[in-house]
Image 1 (tube, rainbow, N blue to C red):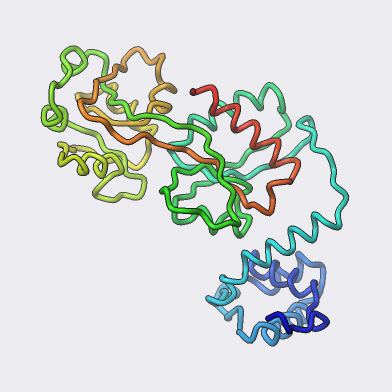
Image 2: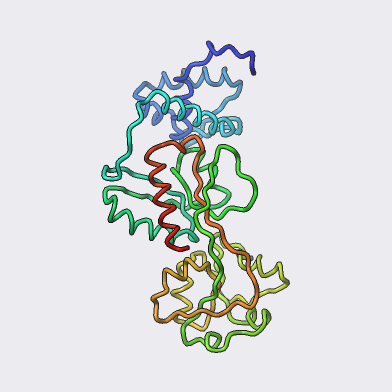
Length: 306
């Protein structure tokens, strides 16, 4: 690789690659680049020769990237972003200007989004946020493809790749919620077995039979009596307030509904691992003035829960 003749490389080819990867269609890529389809096809031919791979395969709806193309995409995006940052004059970001951000969002981080919007509507009313659902498996690819600018995520402790920057936003704990006049609110269960025997509502965003809380309870040898499983965290407070069900949620979710007169808390007679909500973004974009400002706002929003 060190012997490669850079005179064979053309930065415009990487720009074409990026457009093809984003659009997955030769015609739309040509329109985005303001060139002809034949010019894009010619550039694709040169890219295939350069990387010795088809890169994109014809598909009824356009084109699909090959495995090699998907592997190249994060590095090419990084190169182009760094090149644009190098060549473009840096503009200071003003929160008073109009700007649109795309945030990767999970149910567990909705309280941060709520508080963030409370701040922005006062301090930066021209800012638009578009929240997009991502999960632990999809968040890094979404950041690599710049489908999201940053993401809130509950990530496993495994080490992230160097191209992804992580900022710890919020450490929160589990609480068990129930309607305020629930018998277990008045007389909390004295043992883990009594707690597990209560009629539980489980939250499983992807429909898995075992939720995150079930996994934590299984670590201490407990299987709870689950009678309802829902995919959304915010459904839990609304359902338990009107039934005899109980639900284990993170404390930040409960605090969104803390002024709900129908909700109470049941003490959990077992220690459960706390939850860490992180802010993730591409390391290559960490110096972007607009993203840097938004990261500070996210941190301030999360701090309100500490």
